[in-house]
Length: 167
Image (cartoon, rainbow, N blue to C red):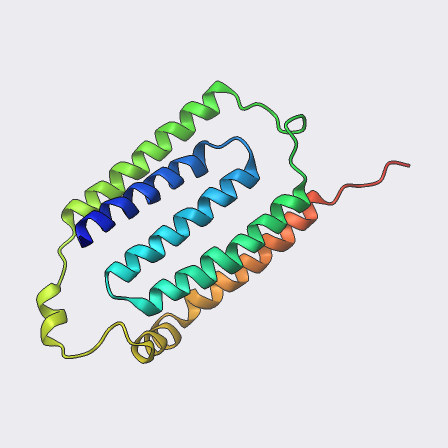
């Protein structure tokens, strides 16, 4: 039963991820991304990581998508104002994404999970206490950089979308 649920969630994740990238309307892409975020939260539930599933649903599907939707609405993207990309930039984008996929696949093949050390550590790595200690001790600087990056990107999107009045 869990295998069937996993495959259904995997199909939803891959399908909504592809629709996010391939959709021509930015609001539809954002909605497909919300579906993808919720299906990833379902994967976390299958892994018995309830805290991560709730964080995924609240932070990504909630807060980040609201930020993205506000940014899209402020930018007021129309089909008339979006320039068509040259064929060279399309080829470069396809080549770079294929190379990134190859690197990710190679990293996945070379990965060596340490399952035995997890079983013998006698520590619940899914507890909020352990996650909080690791996040706010070892990863405090990247955590703060991520928050500053989100703030700067939101301000940048507002400044880009701000149109000058013609006199």
